[in-house]
Image (cartoon, rainbow, N blue to C red; front, side):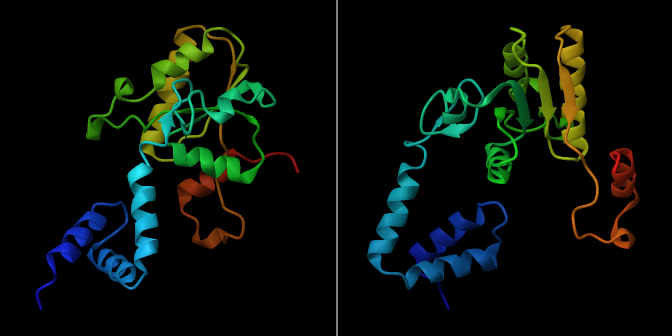
Length: 200
Protein backbone atom coordinates (compact mmCIF):
# COMPACT_ATOMS: atom_id res chain seq x y z
CA UNK A 1 0.00 0.00 0.00
CA UNK A 2 1.33 3.41 -0.96
CA UNK A 3 1.25 6.01 1.84
CA UNK A 4 -0.08 9.49 1.07
CA UNK A 5 2.69 12.04 0.51
CA UNK A 6 1.54 14.27 3.40
CA UNK A 7 1.68 11.33 5.81
CA UNK A 8 5.07 10.20 4.51
CA UNK A 9 6.53 13.71 4.87
CA UNK A 10 5.37 13.96 8.48
CA UNK A 11 6.68 10.46 9.29
CA UNK A 12 10.09 11.48 7.91
CA UNK A 13 10.00 14.70 9.97
CA UNK A 14 9.24 12.80 13.19
CA UNK A 15 12.03 10.28 12.45
CA UNK A 16 14.55 13.14 12.67
CA UNK A 17 13.68 13.67 16.35
CA UNK A 18 15.93 11.99 18.95
CA UNK A 19 14.68 8.62 20.14
CA UNK A 20 11.99 8.35 17.44
CA UNK A 21 12.38 5.46 15.04
CA UNK A 22 10.25 4.61 11.97
CA UNK A 23 7.58 2.70 13.95
CA UNK A 24 7.21 5.41 16.59
CA UNK A 25 7.03 8.06 13.87
CA UNK A 26 4.23 6.16 12.12
CA UNK A 27 2.31 5.75 15.40
CA UNK A 28 2.58 9.49 16.12
CA UNK A 29 1.37 10.48 12.66
CA UNK A 30 -1.60 8.09 12.72
CA UNK A 31 -2.45 9.24 16.23
CA UNK A 32 -2.52 12.85 14.98
CA UNK A 33 -4.76 11.82 12.08
CA UNK A 34 -7.58 10.78 14.42
CA UNK A 35 -7.44 14.04 16.43
CA UNK A 36 -9.83 16.92 15.67
CA UNK A 37 -8.46 19.63 13.37
CA UNK A 38 -8.67 22.18 16.22
CA UNK A 39 -6.14 20.10 18.23
CA UNK A 40 -3.82 19.89 15.23
CA UNK A 41 -4.08 23.66 14.71
CA UNK A 42 -3.13 24.26 18.36
CA UNK A 43 -0.23 21.81 18.05
CA UNK A 44 1.08 23.39 14.83
CA UNK A 45 0.76 26.91 16.27
CA UNK A 46 2.75 25.89 19.39
CA UNK A 47 5.40 24.32 17.16
CA UNK A 48 5.50 27.39 14.92
CA UNK A 49 5.93 29.75 17.90
CA UNK A 50 8.53 27.61 19.70
CA UNK A 51 11.64 29.46 18.48
CA UNK A 52 9.93 32.87 18.30
CA UNK A 53 8.73 32.78 21.91
CA UNK A 54 12.00 31.61 23.46
CA UNK A 55 15.40 33.23 23.89
CA UNK A 56 18.80 32.08 25.07
CA UNK A 57 19.90 33.89 28.21
CA UNK A 58 23.20 35.60 27.36
CA UNK A 59 24.36 35.20 30.96
CA UNK A 60 23.76 31.49 31.68
CA UNK A 61 22.67 30.20 28.21
CA UNK A 62 19.46 28.68 29.58
CA UNK A 63 16.34 28.80 27.40
CA UNK A 64 13.72 31.26 28.62
CA UNK A 65 11.07 33.76 27.53
CA UNK A 66 13.38 36.64 28.43
CA UNK A 67 17.02 37.66 28.52
CA UNK A 68 18.31 37.58 31.21
CA UNK A 69 16.30 34.52 32.21
CA UNK A 70 14.01 34.23 35.22
CA UNK A 71 16.66 32.38 37.27
CA UNK A 72 19.43 34.94 36.60
CA UNK A 73 17.04 37.80 37.52
CA UNK A 74 15.90 36.17 40.77
CA UNK A 75 17.72 37.97 43.63
CA UNK A 76 16.37 35.49 46.19
CA UNK A 77 18.56 32.72 44.73
CA UNK A 78 22.03 32.03 46.13
CA UNK A 79 24.26 34.28 44.03
CA UNK A 80 27.45 32.58 45.28
CA UNK A 81 26.89 29.19 43.56
CA UNK A 82 26.84 28.16 39.92
CA UNK A 83 25.75 24.69 38.83
CA UNK A 84 27.31 23.79 35.46
CA UNK A 85 25.17 21.54 33.24
CA UNK A 86 25.43 20.36 29.64
CA UNK A 87 21.92 21.18 28.40
CA UNK A 88 18.95 23.39 29.29
CA UNK A 89 16.99 20.17 29.89
CA UNK A 90 19.38 19.45 32.80
CA UNK A 91 18.32 22.73 34.44
CA UNK A 92 14.72 21.49 34.37
CA UNK A 93 15.75 18.20 35.99
CA UNK A 94 17.60 19.95 38.85
CA UNK A 95 14.86 22.57 39.34
CA UNK A 96 12.21 19.87 39.50
CA UNK A 97 13.94 18.41 42.57
CA UNK A 98 13.65 21.72 44.46
CA UNK A 99 16.89 21.09 46.40
CA UNK A 100 19.12 23.66 44.65
CA UNK A 101 18.65 27.41 44.87
CA UNK A 102 21.74 28.83 43.16
CA UNK A 103 22.54 29.95 39.61
CA UNK A 104 23.26 27.86 36.51
CA UNK A 105 25.54 27.80 33.51
CA UNK A 106 24.47 25.76 30.47
CA UNK A 107 27.46 24.66 28.40
CA UNK A 108 25.46 23.59 25.36
CA UNK A 109 27.21 20.21 25.22
CA UNK A 110 30.40 18.54 26.40
CA UNK A 111 33.95 18.30 25.09
CA UNK A 112 34.04 15.43 22.61
CA UNK A 113 37.10 15.24 20.33
CA UNK A 114 35.55 12.32 18.39
CA UNK A 115 32.66 14.60 17.39
CA UNK A 116 34.94 17.62 16.80
CA UNK A 117 33.54 19.44 19.84
CA UNK A 118 36.22 21.34 21.72
CA UNK A 119 36.04 24.03 24.41
CA UNK A 120 35.50 26.73 21.75
CA UNK A 121 32.27 25.05 20.55
CA UNK A 122 30.59 25.20 23.97
CA UNK A 123 30.17 27.98 26.57
CA UNK A 124 33.20 27.26 28.78
CA UNK A 125 34.96 30.59 28.32
CA UNK A 126 31.71 32.46 29.10
CA UNK A 127 31.66 30.56 32.39
CA UNK A 128 35.21 31.66 33.21
CA UNK A 129 34.20 35.29 32.55
CA UNK A 130 31.39 34.93 35.10
CA UNK A 131 33.83 33.70 37.75
CA UNK A 132 36.39 36.48 37.48
CA UNK A 133 34.65 39.03 39.73
CA UNK A 134 35.05 36.74 42.77
CA UNK A 135 31.36 36.66 43.76
CA UNK A 136 31.01 32.94 43.04
CA UNK A 137 32.25 30.81 45.95
CA UNK A 138 31.26 27.33 44.68
CA UNK A 139 31.23 25.84 41.21
CA UNK A 140 29.16 22.64 41.06
CA UNK A 141 30.07 20.49 38.05
CA UNK A 142 26.94 18.55 37.10
CA UNK A 143 27.85 17.22 33.66
CA UNK A 144 26.89 13.68 32.68
CA UNK A 145 28.95 10.88 34.27
CA UNK A 146 30.47 9.69 30.97
CA UNK A 147 33.84 10.21 29.27
CA UNK A 148 32.78 13.50 27.66
CA UNK A 149 31.31 14.84 30.89
CA UNK A 150 34.42 13.88 32.87
CA UNK A 151 36.73 15.44 30.25
CA UNK A 152 34.68 18.65 30.38
CA UNK A 153 34.91 18.78 34.19
CA UNK A 154 38.67 18.23 34.12
CA UNK A 155 39.10 20.98 31.51
CA UNK A 156 36.99 23.47 33.50
CA UNK A 157 38.82 22.64 36.74
CA UNK A 158 42.23 23.08 35.10
CA UNK A 159 41.17 26.35 33.47
CA UNK A 160 39.89 27.76 36.79
CA UNK A 161 43.17 26.80 38.49
CA UNK A 162 45.28 28.19 35.63
CA UNK A 163 43.42 31.51 35.86
CA UNK A 164 43.99 31.46 39.66
CA UNK A 165 40.29 31.93 40.38
CA UNK A 166 39.68 31.20 44.07
CA UNK A 167 36.56 29.12 44.65
CA UNK A 168 35.43 25.67 45.71
CA UNK A 169 34.92 23.23 42.83
CA UNK A 170 32.63 20.27 43.53
CA UNK A 171 31.36 17.40 41.40
CA UNK A 172 27.91 15.90 41.86
CA UNK A 173 27.96 12.51 43.58
CA UNK A 174 27.77 9.33 41.58
CA UNK A 175 27.01 5.79 42.55
CA UNK A 176 24.06 3.50 43.10
CA UNK A 177 20.54 4.81 42.54
CA UNK A 178 18.00 4.31 45.33
CA UNK A 179 16.37 0.91 45.04
CA UNK A 180 19.26 -0.66 43.09
CA UNK A 181 20.74 -4.04 44.01
CA UNK A 182 24.51 -4.35 44.50
CA UNK A 183 24.64 -7.59 42.53
CA UNK A 184 23.48 -5.81 39.34
CA UNK A 185 25.86 -2.85 39.62
CA UNK A 186 28.94 -2.73 37.39
CA UNK A 187 32.42 -2.33 38.90
CA UNK A 188 32.80 1.34 37.96
CA UNK A 189 29.48 2.32 39.53
CA UNK A 190 30.38 0.44 42.72
CA UNK A 191 33.81 2.08 42.73
CA UNK A 192 32.20 5.55 42.45
CA UNK A 193 29.76 4.66 45.23
CA UNK A 194 32.62 3.67 47.53
CA UNK A 195 34.64 6.78 46.64
CA UNK A 196 31.65 9.00 47.40
CA UNK A 197 30.81 7.39 50.74
CA UNK A 198 30.13 9.70 53.68
CA UNK A 199 29.77 9.38 57.43
CA UNK A 200 26.50 7.80 58.54
